Image (cartoon, rainbow, N blue to C red; front, side):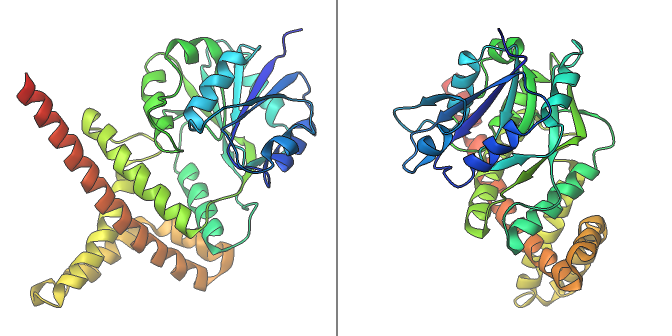
Length: 328
């Protein structure tokens, strides 16, 4: 029989997290599904761990990236409903049943879940990122969204394959979700259900900084093409907060050379914290005043990373456009 859901999990060196994820899948209260694990040429015991479960396992001969692995799994899937999970999450109760309920409505093209407020891994950086995600999700007022969440999302196979799936030129977990969503949202609806929840192993500092730099660099080039912020995901308010934080640091540094900038940095910082007050307040509630100050420090640093990365991305996109225009 054809399963109601095809669960696709791209995995790369996921020996520590793939087991808990598969455990959480088989503990669900909905059992009509198949699981496809696409191993992206792992160098650890991902395969041995995954094969302990009743799954369809595929191993890629060379590292190709999560976009390629997801597309590969989608083509092999038996169901007309594809469910994507990253290999570092674990499902809460009712996830599969709720996905199936949503996609039973033919007017629904895709539906996202959210991350749990408590990260699966310990540490300040994972907690910071978990708090940030909660605040971002809280800012979404409508259940209609424009970005498909590849970490916890379900989508119809037909339109997914017709649009070519994810862009495989993105070799890492970069902006393939944005790139695909901009195309998909033109022909189908994407919804958000906050009751569909997974725990997540959030990245630690080095990986987080690298991710912010890479995603900002690539997203800025997508933005250059459409010249429009997203209604959710990367919103105008979030963009403004980043710029205020970053320029507050730059203005303060410049004040040591040009004294007229002495008051500019603090003023921009105050404006940024006012706009970012929900994030700071939520951090305070979660772990106290010390964590709120830690959050502000992380915001300042990551805003600088985003600013310089985005500027480089805009410059590259501009040069590319000028080059194309010159050839024609």
